[in-house]
Length: 258
Image (tube, rainbow, N blue to C red; front, side, top):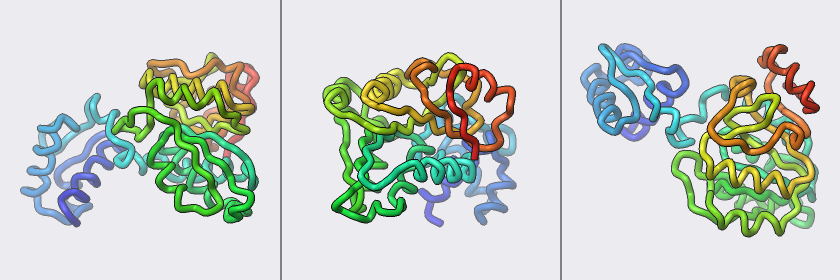
């Protein structure tokens, strides 16, 4: 395991579990205690975690780690959600995807949709996420449309006014929208630029399906993407508590659990 891979693994543990001890790093990554300490000190100096006695814990910056460090959290749930989303897609459809770990999984599953390998009837994917565009561009049965903008390191999303120039000219059949919070009032993103692009996606979509695991339900974030009355369906995992799903159904949102 290279140093880069080791640091990425440590950050992945921090994001998923909230903290790690040196003994855990030694046993899980097969390195010496001295190496584990040096790695934690380096990451702490970069303000990606907080050093504690015998280990490290997440800090506010950890929540802003790039997407590549956040892929493992709720992985099984996101895979189930992604497969259910892809089942809603047929050859020739035009769909929208914003950035995030769940929508990235949706993109991977859409590439496997029956009929998506037919270049004569491609699935058109409109996205502002450069990682999604990169993965799908090599798929012959998928036509990729990328919005303009400035890339954010955390989410690989393109944000800014350039995105809003192209989206009003496009009609999307189904938008699979990843969020950082959803309640009976609406859907939210942590970054106002990402929320603005998400709102532009919503305005040009016929159907909006929120794709998120149950940890985001009943929570809010800094910026509103859209009101609940604009959301058609929520696709989430079966771990969602009934008390969180009830208010969403009452708001008129179709709830699908997988």
